[in-house]
Each structure stands twice: as structure tokens, then as C-alpha cells.
Image (cartoon, rainbow, N blue to C red; front, side, top):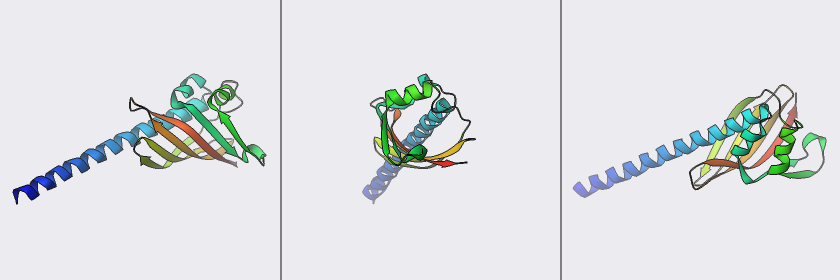
Length: 144
């Protein structure tokens, strides 16, 4: 009987530890997405760069009236933010869903602004220091 109780206690501790770690990851993911949103709204390319993995890509499928799929790397994206071609809107951020997969995650995010609303799927990666970075984004835009 004592062994059964010990097994239950160990299992409960493992479960609680896993839940706490997942909550911590969710909080960190929400924080980096919030920082990303604010940096874009303020055209702050320096702050935005801290949110993005070096391999960041934005995949735009038929965005801005195009019929093509466009892929833009981190350097070009940051340049467009810096030059104010992208960003500069005051948006309301809603994180609809986060899915964790150990050191990777995805998030469905709605960014509702005065000019347009974007529904984006974000891909995130966790680095060796435990920091989450956005590695990819696939936005869909709705005109207001």
C-alpha cells in the first residue's frame, strides 16, 4: 500500500511540475507576441528584432491584393518596419490559441487596427536560454 501511495505522490508532483512549466511557457509566448505587436505599432524595428529568430520569415499568401505567395526574410521585414512601409497602426491584440510542442509552439493571433485586421498564425521556437522567438508568421488581412 505504501508503494502505491508513493507512486501516486510522484505522479502528482510530475503532473504539477509539467503544468507549471506549461503555464510559464504560455506566459513567455504571450509576452513575446505582445512585444512584437507593440513594436510593430510603434515602428520600433530595434525592439521588434528582439522578438524574432534569425531565421524569421513572413509568408504572405495573396496579401495586399496579390494573387501570389510572397516570402520575406527578417532583414527585409525589419527594413519595411523601419521605413514605415509596414506597421504604425494602433491595434488591439487577441491571442486566440497557443499550442505547445516542447521547444516549438504555434499561436493564432488577431491584430485589429484602425486600418485593417490581421489574423495571423505564428510559429515560435524556444532557444537554449528558455526565450521564445517568433520564427514565422502567416497573416491574412481583412480590410476595415
